[in-house]
Length: 220
Image 1 (cartoon, helix red, strand yellow):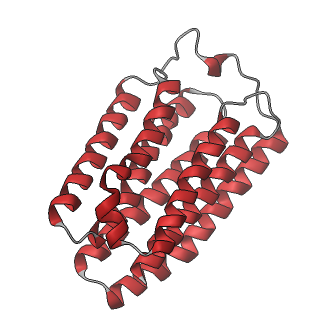
Image 2 (image 1 turned 135 degrees about the horizontal axis):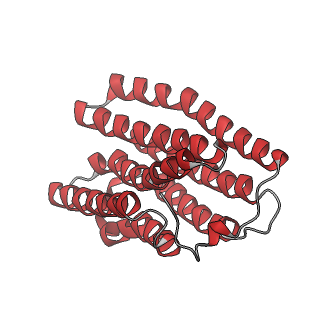
Image 3 (image 1 turned 45 degrees about the horizontal axis):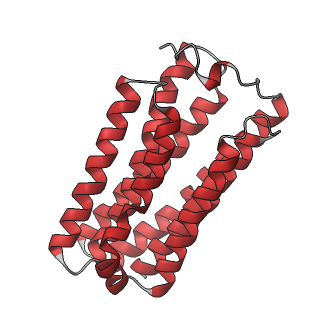
């Protein structure tokens, strides 16, 4: 795949070995945390929750590992045709992770209509975002940042049912995670900053951890 001639990634500086190493460590720690945390969550759900909740959590776990796995592969691969191919999957998996996080919480909604509507909206948005990333790679990258944020916060349309269904701690953790993602975007676009990629992915890891906490509290 080729990027547009005016694409910002064609003019950004190459990351140093130390920056790549730091970014790789952030990814490795995030994956290690997931390897420890998700089996515990799934085992607890297997013992206490119904099949629907367990499947929803499995989808959430899959989204987490797909996101960090493809992100690690993409960011650690040297500039090449393979790197730009991995880039499509890396950016697509962000949508999967967002939709998967919603999926983990949807079974807690008491109103089936709201549950189905929210799930449909989130996964439709994710599917559209994935199609754009796969079919039009390198296009609308800055616009897609807004799409990620909007999809992540679209749950406010169901704030009433969500507030009634989830513990207060989960709501605070969800909000904190969402704000952490937004705060990290500033580093994501600050390409001149040393260790910018590692800092950005650290924000993503912290936000994902906060959202995991929200899910865990809801399940417990």
